[in-house]
Amino acid sequence: MLGLFEVNRESLNERFAAERPSVLPLGMEGTMFGSGTILIVDESSYGGLDLSETIEELDGFVAGPVSSVSEALTILDSTELCGAIVDFDLPDAVQFVMLLIQRNIPAVVQICTTMHQSLPDLGGKVAVLTRPVEPRMILDSLLIEMGKSQLSFE
Image (tube, rainbow, N blue to C red; front, side, top):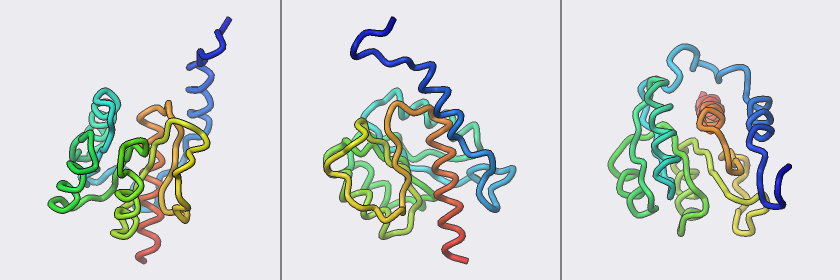
């Protein structure tokens, strides 16, 4: 029996697996990230490392993981990115995500609560996922955002 604040991780994982897209975005078949660079901005070093390993397994490169927006800004100004994964609970994350949107960099935002008060209207430009989320679900969402970005430039 689960206590008041315990989470049944098995049922959460089943739900995330059911939500996983069955088809990759156009042009992404076979190569997954196509040797592109993904920026990871995550306060949790373990979460960032899990994502890094999974991205590298899927033919991608990783910028980071970094644990602050200031470090992420340095990378953003010096590296060509094909996508980003951002911990929205970091200070100044809102402004950083808006900058990613302005630069047309596909992104996934992770939040810890379902009703985040400071979450602005992102106009459908980024995927928003509530933690806990498996790395593969995050990357599937990023691939979809990357595919949508490609379609908007064609």
